[in-house]
Length: 357
Image (cartoon, rainbow, N blue to C red; front, side, top):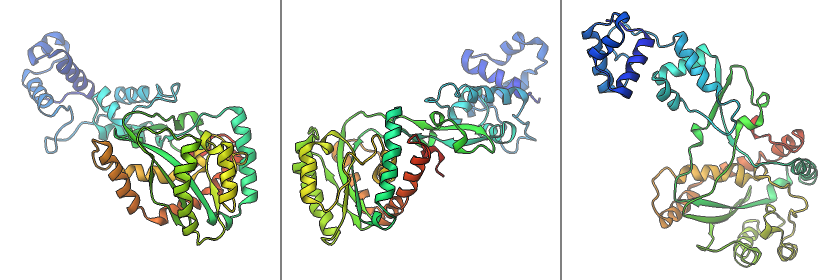
C-alpha cells in the first residue's frame, strides 16, 4: 500500500508520541482506507529506522516535497526573521517536521529558493563607537601604507575553555536565492560571544615577519596593567625585536584597560620604535585585528578536533597546534587588514564582516 507524505508524517507522529498501533490507527481514521498490513509494515519501518522515508530498492519513492511539507519548512525558517539571535538548523527542521534531511535540503533550495548564509561573531556598537571607528580607521589607512603594514606586529590575548565552543558551522540563516550579504540586515548575520568554564588565557604576536611563541597567563591571574607590563610585554617585546632583526617595527594592541594604562603607554614609548596608541586604535574592533578576526578562529578549530577534558590537556593542544600553524595563513590574514579598514570606513564604522566573502 502507498501512503501519502501527509499520512506518513501523521502516522509517524502518532506512533512516536502516543504509541498508536495499526489497529488503533484504523479505528481512529476509518475514512483513510488504510490496510492493516500496510500500516504494520510502515510502523515496523518507523520503529526500526526512525524514518518514514523509503529504503533504497523498496520501490519507486514518493516525493516528500508536497505543499504541506513545503509550507511547514517555510514556516519554521521564517520564524527566525524577527529573532536575529536565534537560528534553526537543518537537523532541527528534520526533527520538527519528520521530513528527511535530503528532502528538507531540496525544499529549501528548489521550492523555497533560499540561500544559506553563515553567521559571524560581532561586538555591539553604539553610535559613538561607530563614529570613532570610522574616523580612526581612516587615520590608520593614511598612516600605514600597504608596505608599512608588513612591519606591524599585531598582538592579542584569548581565553580558551576546556568545554568545546558551539559549532559556528551550524549557525546559519536562509534568504532568497540571489540575495547578497550586504542586502541582509547585519543583526541577522551576526552572533554574540559568550565566556564560561575552566579556561586558560594565552597571548601572542604576529606579523608578516614571523610569529612569537605562545605566552600562557598564570592560572587565576587577572591581567591588570602591572601583570601586562611586567610579564606579558617583557616576554613579547624581546621576541618581536629579534624577529624584526632589531630593525624598525610597529607594535599594535587593542584598547583593553591594561593596554591603555598610563604606565603601559610610557613603557611602549621607551621600548618600541613605534606603536599604535589607544587614541588611534578603533574601539570595540576585533574585526580589525588579524589575530582576532582570523588567527584565533583557525587555531580554535584545530585545537578542538580532539576531545579535551582538562586544563593541562587544553594547554598542550593549544601549544601543539600553534607550532603547526602555517605562517602563510598569518600573512594572508594580515594582508586583509587595509581592506577591512576601508570596509569599516564605508560602513561608517558599523559592522561590515557580513559583507565579506
